[in-house]
Length: 88
Image (cartoon, rainbow, N blue to C red):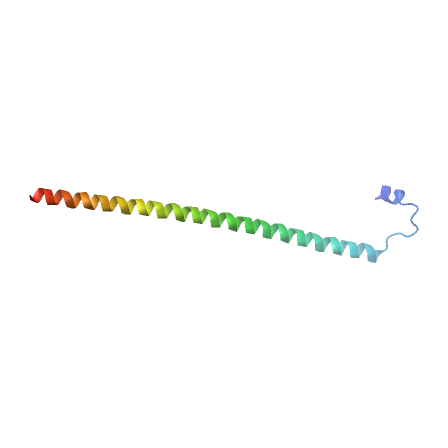
């Protein structure tokens, strides 16, 4: 801070307490907005990733179910065909 004061030695006014307090309040406000923005951005990113993962899992589960259902139908047809042929 000393170097700043030396560099600005031609300035007649020194910052008063009100100006410093106001600047600190503004900085605090800006920092709070930045933190909130980062937090919301991270939350939104996490939500989007979770949504994507859920959709992928849901899609995979549907494919597995369809495959199992198709295998069950084929097995039932084969089983029915075997039992009819054994009756003859």
